Length: 189
Image (cartoon, rainbow, N blue to C red; front, side, top):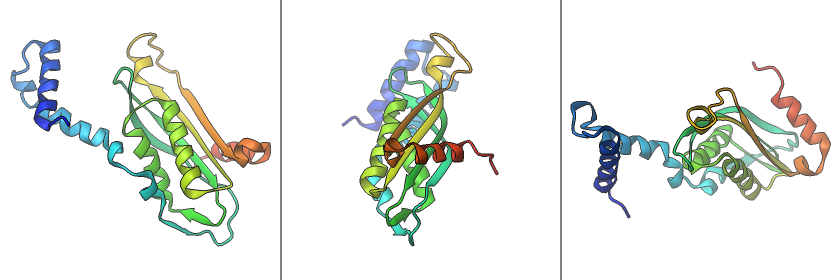
């Protein structure tokens, strides 16, 4: 396991590569600040999905779509260490148990706060909903803008990547999938 001091030393080496003088006043405490910020940005490694989704409530017979849409998220691309951010829409159809809505937002953060790619976040959230809630269906749609597309390479400022994972009735049947899409695209409050 790498220590905090070793991690800070690695950041200092990168600063010397970029700047030449990692000891100048403005950069003097940068290694510590970077490691502190990374501990927050990459906090998903210490989050357990099962613990997040184990606290459920009696659904009292509710059998419609439960959708939390427009969940903002920020993540970091594992290929270039560039940020990407956007919004996630996650839905499920409960069998007999429902989960608190804050848990749906937290499961997005649990996956996003790691070195990632968008496809893995999408699949991971859907896997967790399916495994821990056992719903009739689970769906995840993520729309994001990627720093590696905007700041370097092709430099396409307005491109948005969309990924989806449909499970259970959302995959098998067109009607619930269409209802979900209508709910996602309905007017905001």
